[in-house]
Amino acid sequence: MISEEEIEHLKDLARVEFGKTETKKLAKDLGEILGYVDRLKKADVSSALEMTHALEGVKNVFRKDEKGKDEGGLVLTKDLINAFPEKENNYLKVQAIL
Image 1 (cartoon, rainbow, N blue to C red):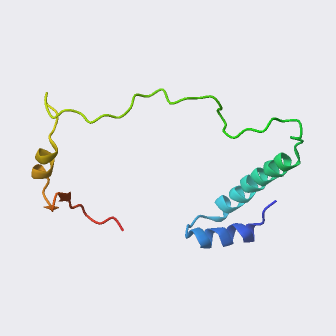
Image 2 (tube, rainbow, N blue to C red):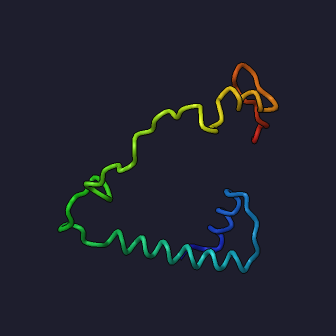
Image 3 (cartoon, one colour):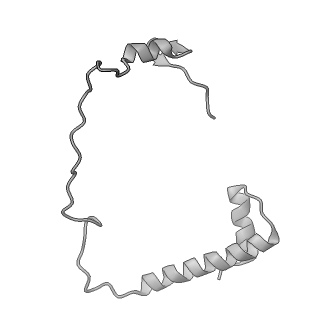
């Protein structure tokens, strides 16, 4: 089981805040998850076949991407650029997130 002190340390690292009740619940939940991982580590997989992918033999069934035609009500690239409030050299300027 993971200790409440370890949960407090994780809270500090993640810069999150929650109360004592949530700390106890998280310690219990993480303890159960880690116990499950330990059980998985001990599982005998010697007779299992090796796989390179979870779904072998699956192929892409989607069509190839193709450039659409600028007609029939579709927005032209130049129209989109012209309609955008802030632009510079064909780049659209957006507000910084960070």
